Amino acid sequence: MSDVLISRLCIIGVGLIGGSLARALRDSNAVKEVIGCGRDIAHLQQAQQLGVIDHFVTDPAEAVKDADMVVLAVPLGAMQGIMQRIAPALTSGCILTDVGSAKGSVIIAAQNVFGEVPTFLIPGHPIAGTEKSGVEASFAGLFQDRRVILTPTETSAADAVQKVRAMWEACGADVVEMGVAHHDEILAATSHLPHMLAYALVDTLARMDDSREIFDFAAGGFRDFTRIASSDPDMWHDICLANHDALVKVLEAFSDDLRLLADAVRRADSDFLKDTFTRAKQARDGFCDNGD
Amino acid sequence: MSDVLISRLCIIGVGLIGGSLARALRDSNAVKEVIGCGRDIAHLQQAQQLGVIDHFVTDPAEAVKDADMVVLAVPLGAMQGIMQRIAPALTSGCILTDVGSAKGSVIIAAQNVFGEVPTFLIPGHPIAGTEKSGVEASFAGLFQDRRVILTPTETSAADAVQKVRAMWEACGADVVEMGVAHHDEILAATSHLPHMLAYALVDTLARMDDSREIFDFAAGGFRDFTRIASSDPDMWHDICLANHDALVKVLEAFSDDLRLLADAVRRADSDFLKDTFTRAKQARDGFCDNGD
Image 1 (tube, rainbow over the protein chains, first blue to last red):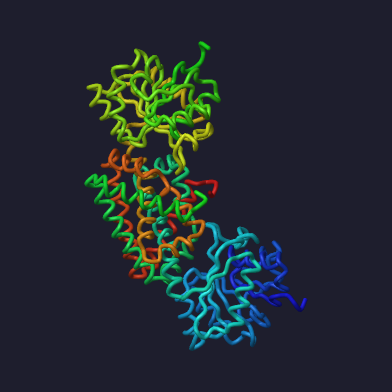
Image 2 (cartoon, each protein chain N blue to C red):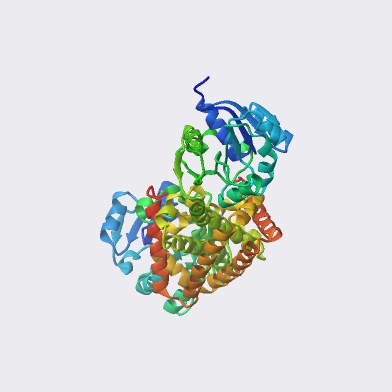
C-alpha cells in the first residue's frame, strides 16, 4: 500500500462535504484509513455504518494523531476553535486543509492560532454541494467534474499544495488556484449573494397575509429559484460573518441595481426593462452553454 | 365526432404555451381541428410540420372564423390589438380565453375593445412553462398536474367557464378559479418578483470587471437560481407593464426586507441572520414537501 496517496486521513466534520470526500477517496483507492471526528457520536456511528469512515473519535487532538492529511469540514465559525485544539497534536509532515466557503477568515484563524500561516496549511474550497446536509446526503460523485479552488499563500509548501491537489483530482475534480481575496469576491457574487436573495425572498413571502396560498401557486421556476433557501441556516450565518466585507460589497451593488430596476418598473420604462432583461438573458445563455 | 369538446380551436400565438395546449388537446382527443395564427409564416409552417396545428392563417379575423374556442397565447402587450382585429369576426357562441400571466390588463383590454367585459371571455393562466420559448419547445405533458387559474368576472357565462375548465382538465391540469386582482397579487409574488431578481442578479454580475471568471465558477445552485433569467425578455417586459401595480408593491416589500438583511450582514447581527435564514428554510421546506 506504499503508493496510496493518503495513509491516514482525518476528517473533522463528517457531513455532506466531508463524507463525500471520504467516499470519493475510498472509491479511487487514494486513501488507506479514514478517521472521522465530530461532536455527535450518533452521527459518527452512522458515518461508520455507512462505510464512510473506518473509526471515529470525538476529541480533535486525538483524531489528528499520526494523520498525514487533516481536512477541516466544519462550519467556518468553528475553524479557529478546532485549529486551537489540534495544533499541538499535528504530526510532523501532516498537511492541513479545509473546505470552507470563505478563505480569508480561515487564514486569519490560522494566524491567530499558529502565529503565522503554517506552510502545511493549504486552504481549499470545493465548488460543489446541494441544499441538503449531513453524512446521509453524501455521495462519492459529488466532486466529479466540479471545480475545487485552492488558495495557497506565499509561504505554502509546494509539495503540500501538490498533495491537496492530487487528493481532489482523485475525486474527479478540476483543481484551480487563486488568491484568497479574489476567491472571496468571486464566491460572494456567485454563491453568497444568491443565497441572501433566496432567503430574503422566501422570508418576505412567508410573512405575507396570504403566504399559504402564495406558496400553493408556486411553479417550477419558483422551486428552482428558492431551492438554496433550504440550505443550513447555521452554516450560512457563519459564511455571512466570515466573508463579511466581500458580501456587503456585492449586496450593495445588487441593491443599487435592483433600485434602478424597480424605478424603471414604476415609471414603466420600456427601454430600460427590455435592455436589462436582454443583457441578462444573453449573459445567462452564454455562461450556461447547454441551455440548462 | 359530436362528443368532441372543441370542434374548431383557434390558437393565436403558437409558441410554448399555445403549442403545448394544442398537443395536449389532440392527445386526449378533445379537439377536432386546430387553426394556428401568428405573424411569422415560417414559424407557423414549423408548427404544422410538427403536427401541432392542422392549418394556419396570418390574419386573426380570418383565423377565428367558425371557431368555437379562441385562445389568445400572445404576449400581454399584443392582447388588445388582437382583440380589436378579431372582435368583428367572432362567431356567435364562440368562447374567448387567454393564457396571459397577468389578468387585470386582459380585462381592461377587453373593456377597451368590446365596451364591456364580454360574457364569453374567460381569462385564464396556466401556471406552467419553462425558460424556453417557441413551438419547438412545446410538449403535450406541459400542463399535466399543473395549476390553471381562471378569473371569470361577474358577467361571465357559466357554460363558457365550464368549457374552458374542461379544456384544461383534458390537458391534465388542476383548474381553480379566483378573482382578477388576487391572481395578479399572487403571481407578482411567486413569479414576477423572482424573475426581476434573477434578471437583476445576472445583469449585476455580468457588468462586473471579472464577470467572465465569476460565471466560470458558478455552481449548480447558481444555475438553478438564475435559470429564469433565460426567459424571453419581450414577454417579461410586457408582464412588468401589465401587472405594474402588484409588481411594484412586492418589489418594494422585498427591497425593504433586503435592506434590513443587508444591514444585519453589515453589523454582523447573528440573531437576525439566524432567525431570517431559519424562518426561510422552514417555509421553503414546508411548501416543497418532497424536499426538492
